[in-house]
View: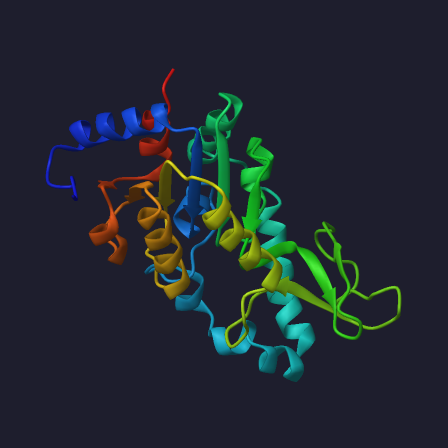
Length: 250
């Protein structure tokens, strides 16, 4: 049953009760969470894809045409992200973990603000902007240099390295997908929080549906309605940094 029709306060109170009772929480987070730390989203009216053509910066073909152009765009993003700090939404999820709950975070975001806030179990399904991958041998390594001193950065083997993020036309990396699938099968999730994502990717809908089928209470948090509202037990409309701290019991 969707409780979005009640007052927001009543819905938040119900959500707080569900979270307080939960031992295992799965949180699916999207760009809306990081946006509150000043990191630009992709699809909003002021998002990155309103200013830049994704075909020019976020496809394997774009990289093959002009790796320097792609890397300069990512170098600017990395430099901006390096200044970002966790916001109350990130800290609320980390606080739940400090209270002794297991909080398994599946994030579409390529930043590491969840980890900076103190969350220990974070799966990056779209990769990390702080990782680079060798185009020759596939090796992945961390690189936090901002701005980059060499574009493109080079692997120890001498070959250039690309951003280790998922581009348009690419499959999700197998290892994170397995982590999510195993978690859904092996862990009895009590609450599934879906925060700051409009669920435009079918796999998000599938994973949330699977959690619900296994008995999880689904709580969505987003400033506007999303396709997930119909799957939600509680659809809370508002900013993640405002709503999530209210779901955490003192």
